[in-house]
Length: 97
Image (cartoon, rainbow, N blue to C red; front, side, top):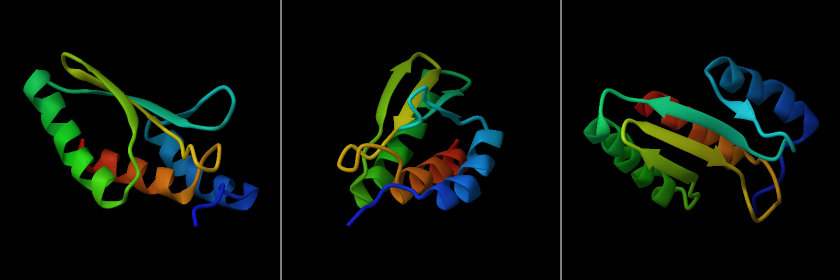
């Protein structure tokens, strides 16, 4: 079962993500990042690669695409905030971008 990140886990896992451009939402329950690509095909290719991991891990992002930008919001709805799955997917998205 997925659980909310503890304060200790947040203090350990979130700083590397925020230093790579992820931000905590105002209510501290989600991670948000906007990725910028050369053009629409590159943005869409990123979404396709990320979707394969999201499906494999059964953890799907809230995201949108506008031409060369992909805006992502990660939260675990089942637990009402951030879980290890959000951190895992954020790290993978950074690798795929």
